[in-house]
Image (tube, rainbow, N blue to C red; front, side, top):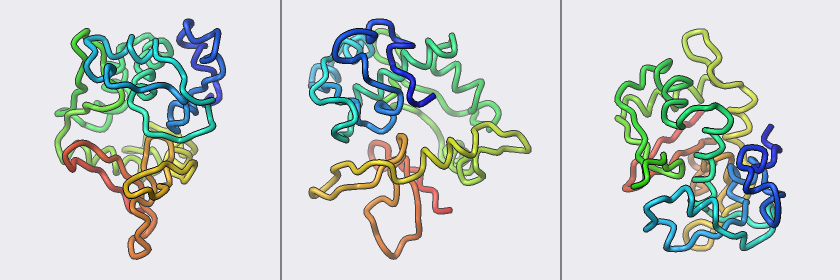
Length: 200
């Protein structure tokens, strides 16, 4: 459940200020976890994220948070018993034929779940097509329709460029830039203009 406490998967989060943080908070970027400059410079970014303190009450404030997203690396491993890249390859990439896709790691060897998916245009387009088809691929339901709907719906408002509040789903930007001329869309926005936009 998205309302599972992170502590169910990361025992060190079972007590103290982090005990109320849920998976939903991580996915909606409302965990309140601190993200300092040392996070990006750390050899072990996963441990740095797991040990960070909370700056705000979980669910109170939406702020783009790479450290919070990186906690998902530990959650995926605990829930699946597999390395996050191995899990994604078996669950999505191989069924979709995304054969030129991989995931970057920190210097300690941990998958960085806040960024770093290395892919090709055609591989990335398959991921967009999967969402466009409500999680179905070649007759197989790889993701539930409910998940696709929740992930790509306007759930919270995040401060974006020029002080604008931008609709945000579960790790997807929704109706990016709020351009009335563009129909409903959702976006995976990567570094250096590497973006995936789906316009249903």
